[in-house]
Length: 240
Image (tube, rainbow, N blue to C red):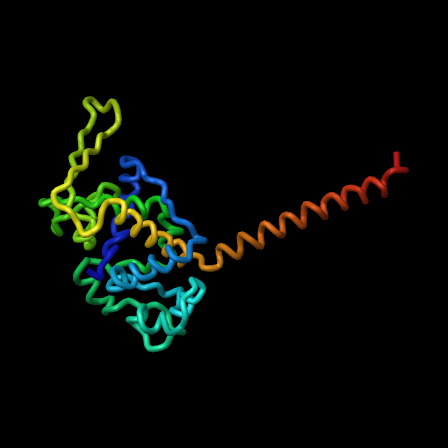
Protein backbone atom coordinates (compact mmCIF):
# COMPACT_ATOMS: atom_id res chain seq x y z
CA UNK A 1 0.00 0.00 0.00
CA UNK A 2 2.57 2.56 -1.08
CA UNK A 3 0.75 3.97 -4.08
CA UNK A 4 -1.43 6.65 -2.52
CA UNK A 5 -2.56 9.36 -4.94
CA UNK A 6 -1.41 7.25 -7.89
CA UNK A 7 -3.51 9.03 -10.49
CA UNK A 8 -4.01 12.42 -8.92
CA UNK A 9 -4.45 15.16 -11.52
CA UNK A 10 -4.72 12.65 -14.40
CA UNK A 11 -7.94 14.22 -15.70
CA UNK A 12 -7.98 17.91 -14.70
CA UNK A 13 -11.15 18.82 -16.56
CA UNK A 14 -13.02 15.93 -14.98
CA UNK A 15 -11.77 17.03 -11.59
CA UNK A 16 -12.98 20.58 -12.15
CA UNK A 17 -16.38 19.30 -13.15
CA UNK A 18 -16.59 17.13 -10.03
CA UNK A 19 -15.72 20.07 -7.78
CA UNK A 20 -18.85 21.79 -9.02
CA UNK A 21 -20.93 18.69 -8.22
CA UNK A 22 -19.59 17.46 -4.89
CA UNK A 23 -19.29 19.87 -1.99
CA UNK A 24 -15.77 20.11 -0.63
CA UNK A 25 -15.25 19.73 3.10
CA UNK A 26 -13.08 22.27 4.85
CA UNK A 27 -9.67 20.85 5.69
CA UNK A 28 -9.01 21.05 9.46
CA UNK A 29 -5.22 21.00 9.07
CA UNK A 30 -3.03 23.16 11.29
CA UNK A 31 0.42 24.21 10.00
CA UNK A 32 1.54 24.88 13.58
CA UNK A 33 0.79 21.33 14.78
CA UNK A 34 4.20 19.62 14.70
CA UNK A 35 2.80 16.24 15.76
CA UNK A 36 0.27 16.33 12.92
CA UNK A 37 2.97 17.31 10.42
CA UNK A 38 5.22 14.46 11.55
CA UNK A 39 2.32 12.00 11.31
CA UNK A 40 1.50 13.28 7.83
CA UNK A 41 5.14 12.85 6.75
CA UNK A 42 5.06 9.26 7.96
CA UNK A 43 1.83 8.57 6.05
CA UNK A 44 3.27 10.12 2.91
CA UNK A 45 6.48 8.07 3.11
CA UNK A 46 4.59 4.82 3.74
CA UNK A 47 1.76 5.21 1.24
CA UNK A 48 2.56 7.91 -1.32
CA UNK A 49 6.28 7.71 -2.02
CA UNK A 50 5.85 4.53 -4.02
CA UNK A 51 4.47 6.61 -6.90
CA UNK A 52 4.85 10.27 -5.99
CA UNK A 53 8.09 12.07 -5.29
CA UNK A 54 8.75 15.62 -4.10
CA UNK A 55 11.51 16.88 -6.34
CA UNK A 56 11.47 20.37 -4.82
CA UNK A 57 11.93 19.17 -1.25
CA UNK A 58 14.87 17.42 0.41
CA UNK A 59 14.84 14.96 3.24
CA UNK A 60 16.69 17.36 5.53
CA UNK A 61 13.73 19.73 5.16
CA UNK A 62 11.91 17.40 7.55
CA UNK A 63 14.13 18.74 10.33
CA UNK A 64 11.88 21.81 10.37
CA UNK A 65 9.10 19.51 11.61
CA UNK A 66 11.05 18.79 14.76
CA UNK A 67 12.67 15.56 13.55
CA UNK A 68 16.33 14.73 14.01
CA UNK A 69 18.59 13.55 11.22
CA UNK A 70 18.74 10.12 12.85
CA UNK A 71 14.93 9.87 12.96
CA UNK A 72 14.69 10.86 9.30
CA UNK A 73 17.39 8.43 8.23
CA UNK A 74 16.08 5.49 10.25
CA UNK A 75 12.33 5.91 9.72
CA UNK A 76 11.52 8.06 6.70
CA UNK A 77 14.37 7.95 4.19
CA UNK A 78 13.55 5.17 1.73
CA UNK A 79 14.75 6.50 -1.63
CA UNK A 80 18.07 8.20 -0.90
CA UNK A 81 21.43 7.66 0.76
CA UNK A 82 21.95 11.16 2.16
CA UNK A 83 19.49 13.45 3.93
CA UNK A 84 20.49 16.29 1.61
CA UNK A 85 19.03 14.50 -1.43
CA UNK A 86 15.59 15.32 -2.91
CA UNK A 87 12.65 13.11 -2.02
CA UNK A 88 12.58 10.97 -5.15
CA UNK A 89 10.02 8.53 -6.43
CA UNK A 90 10.59 4.95 -5.32
CA UNK A 91 10.39 3.36 -8.79
CA UNK A 92 11.10 4.15 -12.42
CA UNK A 93 8.80 6.87 -13.87
CA UNK A 94 8.75 4.99 -17.18
CA UNK A 95 7.25 1.98 -15.42
CA UNK A 96 4.69 4.22 -13.74
CA UNK A 97 3.67 5.63 -17.12
CA UNK A 98 3.23 2.15 -18.56
CA UNK A 99 1.06 1.12 -15.60
CA UNK A 100 -1.13 4.22 -15.30
CA UNK A 101 -0.89 5.72 -18.79
CA UNK A 102 0.92 8.79 -17.48
CA UNK A 103 3.58 9.27 -14.84
CA UNK A 104 2.03 10.10 -11.43
CA UNK A 105 2.46 13.80 -10.61
CA UNK A 106 5.05 15.17 -8.25
CA UNK A 107 3.52 16.26 -4.94
CA UNK A 108 5.85 19.15 -4.13
CA UNK A 109 3.20 21.77 -4.86
CA UNK A 110 0.03 19.68 -5.08
CA UNK A 111 -1.62 21.53 -2.18
CA UNK A 112 -1.08 24.88 -3.89
CA UNK A 113 -2.42 23.66 -7.24
CA UNK A 114 -5.41 21.71 -5.91
CA UNK A 115 -6.07 23.26 -2.52
CA UNK A 116 -6.20 21.69 0.92
CA UNK A 117 -10.00 21.34 0.90
CA UNK A 118 -9.90 19.44 -2.39
CA UNK A 119 -7.23 17.05 -1.14
CA UNK A 120 -8.95 16.47 2.19
CA UNK A 121 -12.27 15.67 0.53
CA UNK A 122 -10.75 13.63 -2.31
CA UNK A 123 -8.90 11.28 0.03
CA UNK A 124 -12.10 10.59 1.97
CA UNK A 125 -14.52 9.97 -0.91
CA UNK A 126 -13.39 6.76 -2.56
CA UNK A 127 -16.03 4.11 -3.07
CA UNK A 128 -16.37 0.65 -4.60
CA UNK A 129 -17.27 0.71 -8.29
CA UNK A 130 -17.21 -2.64 -10.05
CA UNK A 131 -17.50 -0.94 -13.44
CA UNK A 132 -14.24 0.97 -12.99
CA UNK A 133 -11.01 -0.68 -14.22
CA UNK A 134 -9.51 -0.59 -10.73
CA UNK A 135 -12.75 -1.42 -8.96
CA UNK A 136 -12.76 2.01 -7.31
CA UNK A 137 -14.09 5.46 -8.05
CA UNK A 138 -14.14 8.84 -6.36
CA UNK A 139 -16.94 11.33 -5.74
CA UNK A 140 -14.67 14.36 -6.12
CA UNK A 141 -12.68 12.95 -9.03
CA UNK A 142 -15.07 10.81 -11.15
CA UNK A 143 -13.46 8.02 -13.18
CA UNK A 144 -10.19 8.38 -11.31
CA UNK A 145 -7.51 5.95 -12.46
CA UNK A 146 -6.02 5.14 -9.07
CA UNK A 147 -7.39 2.48 -6.74
CA UNK A 148 -8.20 3.23 -3.14
CA UNK A 149 -5.00 1.98 -1.52
CA UNK A 150 -6.19 2.99 1.95
CA UNK A 151 -9.32 0.86 1.80
CA UNK A 152 -7.99 -1.49 4.47
CA UNK A 153 -7.77 1.31 7.01
CA UNK A 154 -10.84 3.30 5.96
CA UNK A 155 -12.99 0.36 4.99
CA UNK A 156 -15.01 -0.25 1.83
CA UNK A 157 -17.85 2.12 1.09
CA UNK A 158 -20.64 2.36 -1.44
CA UNK A 159 -22.02 5.54 -2.98
CA UNK A 160 -25.47 6.06 -4.45
CA UNK A 161 -25.98 9.20 -6.49
CA UNK A 162 -29.50 10.53 -7.02
CA UNK A 163 -29.80 13.11 -9.78
CA UNK A 164 -32.65 15.65 -9.56
CA UNK A 165 -35.56 15.22 -11.92
CA UNK A 166 -35.74 17.63 -14.84
CA UNK A 167 -32.51 19.24 -13.73
CA UNK A 168 -34.05 20.93 -10.66
CA UNK A 169 -32.47 20.67 -7.23
CA UNK A 170 -29.09 19.40 -6.06
CA UNK A 171 -27.52 16.01 -6.62
CA UNK A 172 -27.93 13.79 -3.57
CA UNK A 173 -25.05 11.56 -2.36
CA UNK A 174 -25.82 8.62 -0.07
CA UNK A 175 -22.90 6.77 1.54
CA UNK A 176 -23.13 3.30 3.02
CA UNK A 177 -20.57 0.95 4.56
CA UNK A 178 -19.76 -2.40 2.95
CA UNK A 179 -17.00 -3.43 5.33
CA UNK A 180 -15.10 -1.81 8.17
CA UNK A 181 -11.47 -0.79 8.11
CA UNK A 182 -8.82 -0.98 10.80
CA UNK A 183 -9.52 2.66 11.70
CA UNK A 184 -12.70 4.29 12.87
CA UNK A 185 -14.07 7.08 10.65
CA UNK A 186 -12.73 9.65 13.11
CA UNK A 187 -9.27 8.08 13.10
CA UNK A 188 -9.19 7.91 9.32
CA UNK A 189 -10.24 11.54 8.98
CA UNK A 190 -7.42 12.47 11.38
CA UNK A 191 -4.92 10.50 9.27
CA UNK A 192 -6.04 12.30 6.12
CA UNK A 193 -5.91 15.63 7.94
CA UNK A 194 -2.30 14.95 8.93
CA UNK A 195 -1.37 13.93 5.39
CA UNK A 196 -2.94 17.07 3.93
CA UNK A 197 -1.19 19.12 6.61
CA UNK A 198 2.15 17.73 5.47
CA UNK A 199 1.37 18.29 1.78
CA UNK A 200 0.45 21.91 2.53
CA UNK A 201 3.75 22.32 4.36
CA UNK A 202 5.72 20.69 1.54
CA UNK A 203 4.12 23.03 -0.99
CA UNK A 204 5.61 26.02 0.82
CA UNK A 205 7.96 25.08 3.70
CA UNK A 206 8.74 28.73 4.43
CA UNK A 207 5.10 29.76 4.30
CA UNK A 208 4.73 30.12 8.08
CA UNK A 209 7.87 32.23 8.44
CA UNK A 210 6.91 34.34 5.42
CA UNK A 211 3.50 35.14 6.87
CA UNK A 212 5.00 36.00 10.27
CA UNK A 213 7.53 38.34 8.66
CA UNK A 214 4.77 39.87 6.54
CA UNK A 215 2.72 40.71 9.62
CA UNK A 216 5.73 42.38 11.26
CA UNK A 217 6.50 44.36 8.09
CA UNK A 218 2.91 45.59 7.82
CA UNK A 219 2.96 46.65 11.47
CA UNK A 220 6.21 48.58 11.01
CA UNK A 221 4.88 50.25 7.85
CA UNK A 222 1.70 51.31 9.65
CA UNK A 223 3.77 52.94 12.39
CA UNK A 224 5.99 54.68 9.83
CA UNK A 225 2.88 55.90 8.01
CA UNK A 226 1.76 57.73 11.16
CA UNK A 227 5.11 59.51 11.50
CA UNK A 228 5.20 60.28 7.78
CA UNK A 229 1.71 61.78 7.96
CA UNK A 230 2.62 63.94 10.97
CA UNK A 231 5.80 65.07 9.23
CA UNK A 232 3.85 65.98 6.12
CA UNK A 233 1.38 68.06 8.14
CA UNK A 234 4.23 69.86 9.92
CA UNK A 235 6.08 70.52 6.67
CA UNK A 236 3.06 71.91 4.81
CA UNK A 237 1.32 73.70 7.68
CA UNK A 238 2.34 77.19 6.43
CA UNK A 239 1.52 76.48 2.80
CA UNK A 240 -1.90 77.68 1.69
